[in-house]
Amino acid sequence: MTKSGLFWGTILLIIGLLLLFSNLGIIAIEIWSAIWAVLLIVVGLGILYGVFSGREAPGQEVAIPLEGAARATIHLSHGAGRLRVDAGAPTDALLEGTFGGGLDYRSDRKGDQLNVHLSPPDLLAMMVPWNWGREGLGWLLRLNGEIPLSLAFETGASDARLDLTDLRVTDLKLETGASSLNVTLPAQAGHTRARIDAGAASVAVRIPAQVAARLRLEGGLASIEVDEARFPRAGRLYQSPNYETAENRIDLKVEAGVGSLRVR
Image (cartoon, rainbow, N blue to C red; front, side, top):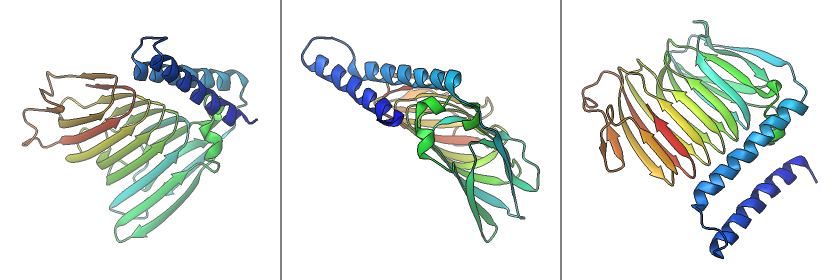
């Protein structure tokens, strides 16, 4: 049996036993909260296993030139591991970074727009948690802060830290599985449309103080914590009082399965 099969088989077995015992009345717990906790515990054990047993692989240094483009889209697939994103790429580069475990990418130019797709050479290898603790599976990206960006990130079981404060992100889509996601949204991008789709995830969102926001929350979130002093609530909608007139504003929709959400 492969390590991957053993891991996911164990996950399904534990979840199945929890559901069975709950239906039989043997245990009385909030079942979806318990499943979320179990997933995070097993993910954590996988990360620790990777830290203490994995060999570190050197990172691949990559820079993708801007080619004179006035705007860009970046589609990133990052199966599992550590992901760090912020501003700081040179003005003549769309992005630069260090890609532990390697990188496959392709780019094409359409008019004044540059489209880039990033993915690991072996996406399946990054889905197994005993690899997550290896520094060699971490990605560190610096993006160009001078042009409008449309970002679409897909991650599996990952630890993602995205600081978009100094980036001109107009569209953002994040899809993540059993993960920890911490994202700071843009401070001066005008109108940003953002969507987060999460599975069993812990999601923390920071909205810069001078930015207005409208938040829509959907799904079975076990824990929701929103700063209602900044974003007063009306049903499942939270909105800044000055949202309609703000120069910099964010329209954020979060759809999650079992997990937690914190917005500040």
